[in-house]
Image 1: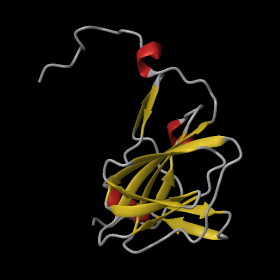
Image 2 (image 1 turned 90 degrees about the vertical axis):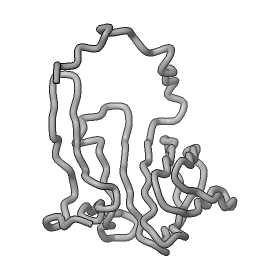
Image 3 (image 1 turned 180 degrees about the vertical axis):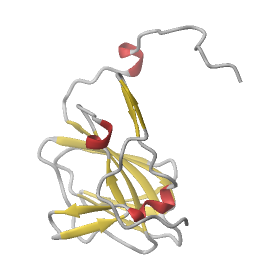
Length: 160
């Protein structure tokens, strides 16, 4: 893993324009350089970074998470209004959702309704990496096919 400067609470945009914002977090295994205050624990947790503010997102919250080997969330939680989609990107773990244990690994996706009581743990020897997308439940989001609009074709890539 590469060394990061002292832990930071929020990433900074790496590029932006009138219709986009980009953030580069670096390698997922290196997320330990970020920390986020946790209201239930009364302290900051390392290896977790929320991106809504840095990206200027208005309808979603996105976090990237890196859980060290054999670590576990010590409590379950639910939400008032938001459903969550957990996208596992590496490692091996388990999610506890409403009392059911689900094995998770790279490529696993778990959606939790706001009321679902959930927790997760790393059962592997490496980092458990995952992203969590949080959206207000019943928001009526259109599918990509229904919401998509064609742009330039072919795409105007710059010449090499």
